[in-house]
Image (cartoon, rainbow over all chains, first blue to last red; front, side):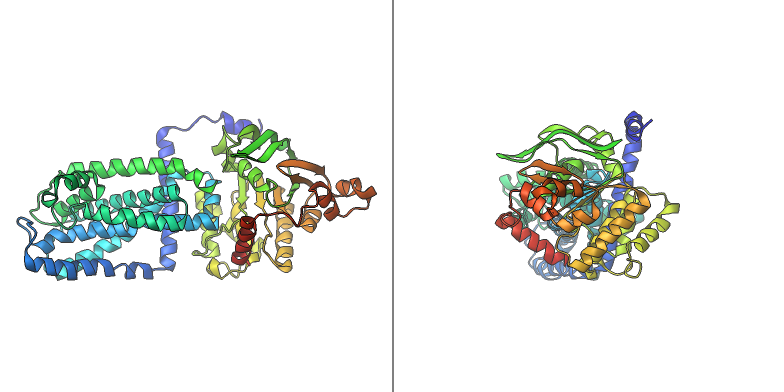
Length: 274
Length: 265
């Protein structure tokens, strides 16, 4: 039997075999991204500036005037999980820029001519965004504790926070890859990136409760994945904070949205090199 | 056995027919050169062989596998070095190889030995743990070639492997391609617009012009067929490509080539 016949006659592997393969390849891509990060770790530190500004400056000032109704918790407590959500959004939303850069260099071509599933290329990047988000979580938790925020530190809640950070990072970095796959050039990406980031942030529950918003904005906030992410973080991080949407809904929304985005991005990926 | 076989292979971009009804067969084990001015369709042809681009019509088989229906399987048996830079500058040379060894599922027990053998073969042992962004153009190309043969592909596609390299680096890349061939007898399909490269390296060449194969044969045969048998390969090329060797290339092509040259060089 020739090689070609051998390959053709081998039956399509079962779904779970293919899924395991997909996971392993995602982890390989993730490892590659981590190796890059290890060579260039300064990025992680400069990223610490943003949560610092929001929590220490913005948070402190707004805490003082008590303008925002945050129920039982103080404003700074209410805001800390929101700043974490926002930080994860910000570290993830420019991932597409790196993809355009890699396409311009030619790195992408080699991956697309290899057997690695396209979805694994997407998820591998998303996981590395998760690690960046995780480093932001450490910074936010340290800053918040320093500012006197009482945080729920039992292991299950911490595990929950980490999962939500990874899911959120996967969602927003994949969203960013989709923008890159759509606009194709760095210049247009910068424009669109700016254009979507601020609305995502302000039309969410990150720094004020949804009930404060006019109706039309509430409608947007309720389809914004960031709202579900922040809701989950708030529930998990603050002792005695009740979830608005329900923790199960938060997880379900993020898993569903990220899965759909990964699937679409995987399908659009090959068109990127044409 | 024919390792590559195409039948009326065609690719259109809007009104432009980049590859026009090409019928081409490559035998297992040969080094084949695709020559042609910029825009002749060489890269488009390679992108179809490597499954990056689906044909508009016609078909192509690589190692007996259809590039559309069996694209996933084709990707397992080919190696590809794109014209653009494909090694990752933010990793070391060793890491570039390690990542691909893992992506190609090389058995753990063989991985290190294989990586070191290739680093040795490509003369990159000493620079293995330096960041690729500190490499010279020739070193980057050698690393990319090493990367593309980690999984012992049956066909290796090299798209302008020496573009933008100085003559010394170019020679060294040739030597390494030849060494690779003598050790693994992989079929190699390369594109180039350097005549000497085709003359030195390739057993057979095809000259592409406006998306078609204008001439095909051994370099010696082609030389014998033009100007009463005394032609150089340059003259053969000018003959079949309509003397366009200088005139080719749009503004974009020129900018792209120089851009590559700057990055690689």
